[in-house]
Image (cartoon, rainbow, N blue to C red):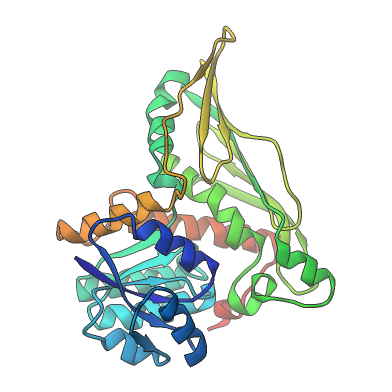
Length: 328
């Protein structure tokens, strides 16, 4: 049994728990929030008795083996390191941190204290991602990839009315690239490694973060176009183009349907069935790592997280997006 404490009481934590409760050896034992009322209300919803508003007391708790962090991105590194210093294993919601420097500090802390640190990027754990990876040789060599994830945020309606919520605040290391764009970037890095060239463009909001954008990525043997947005929707799929065929991906983040089209025009559905809450696979993987005594994922590895953040840092440099966390 792995006893979890959670940091953050928003909708993503609810979704995490909905998936986590499907994992046999998962148990929720503690809740942290900066405000007592929020901590208690969230804990009551899940019949949990232990709550904290002090991060150090939370990290020192003997009721917790591992921590799920779903606070604003700007807080991830500090909270994760405090927990790891107390011997807690840490599962950090994507993006794992604000920048490369913070990721390096987190990895160093994980190694120093011999604990498991993993970024919560669900896509690379999906059954259909494995299918896609296995099928690359069928269509290969791969020459071009288009990853598209554009999802209009309800918070943008409030933004246009003059209410700037956390999702659009640079002080929380947020914006479209960090929140949505990472879904396009992370699997690319997992599949092909760190690229040799990164160039980005974006529409910048008055709050100081990007609303939508694109990243052009170049490898020695292939190119990729990554599209992301929090202020528009898109109805077009993503695809991986090889010299022998193309794999079309419906909704890049969840990969619910994969279609292989060979050069003769033969269309084959290569999808496999997945659970409705696709966060299940990453959580089950994390718990399995702990049960096996492992301290790093072979899927969402430290290197993949670090290289993805390096890519995002270069993209931010292209569009002139800086966070307060960059100035520390």
